[in-house]
Length: 489
Image 1 (tube, helix red, strand yellow):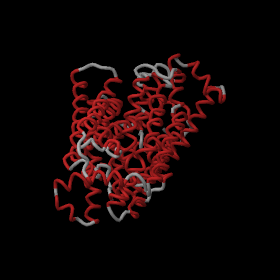
Image 2: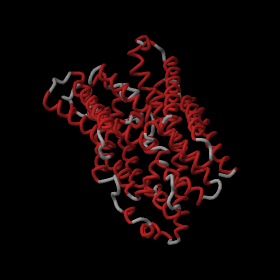
Image 3: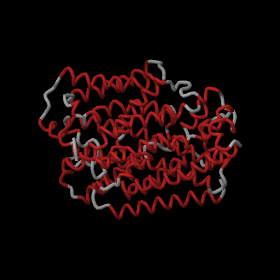
Image 4: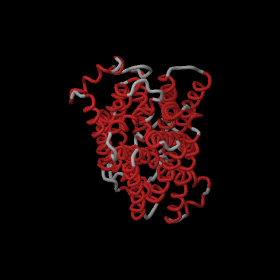
């Protein structure tokens, strides 16, 4: 990168700090810090849900998949998410907003004490926090790789830089700072992505036809809908996981719906996010698909997107593109930090220290900021050790995707009246069944990527639904009342 690129990147860092300061002025309580007081506009919530659904890992691990396997990346990733979110739009998103307005929740796990019991809530809260530590650690590792590819900065220094910037603005500005960063990073990403696609098309030399003729210059398998280990079965498994993840099993995505003023507004937000997943990745991924034409026999495909940017973009725009990737990663990691902090302060700490229930709003806000800071610090430690867990892709796909299902199933299906007979026993057995399945397959078996991804969530679903069907536990009156209150605004 040249001096102008560093100026652009530094300017973005400054804007992030200013976002934190602006958010700080809007926050008077933990409800403001965690849920924006339930005042998040649907269009901002939808953009934020989309942007915070992926990170710089897309430009690292997924760029490598596009380099090696081609168009299948869009099919199993972006299209699978869009299909999965159809269920989110109609069945799940509105219920999160109604939980906030009718039950006063601030964290996604807060309602579980009523829906199941306190023990189940604690198991799910602790499990989710631990899983998220690994996931966010992978995002820091990804941005460290990106900074190294663009600037030559050591990966560890890049991880630390990203973490410190995130700590500052999210600890100060809470959810408001985070969603405004989501908007800013998407606008930057949109600008840089369009320019990047145009520059690649110019280099291909066939005008707009290059979108279609490019595939003739790539390995034949790159134009196939499914390629390599990314089979239709893998895509179906990933779609099921995405339904639970993007509906709110990935907690910070639930927060986008919880913070909406009403169920109707939350449904609009989910619809916007779904359409963005359907359309935008076709533009975003285009340079990744084209990379083998321009950079042949690349030893480290995770750097393919960064190398394409440096090769084709003029100075200044390289910094802009890096800022968009950086912002995208910080959007996701900061969102996680904010939501995990909500779970810790609202659901875990009050059980460990009962006097917290008497704390005033000012004290709770201080605790919210401290727990946010400490969570980010822990994830940075994991990032430095990412290679021990199979690298960025290993952490994101193998660890997070495989583990999110068992904890998400009781949370998401628990919102639906059809599963009201699945009680705390069903929830706990499904969680432990899924986690044990993952541990056995990871430690003692050699299976396909599809089996490794699908087995934990399939096991959990069978146990959870089966217990509800065959045990037919009596539904507690408070559970009936809770589920009935979520049917309409």
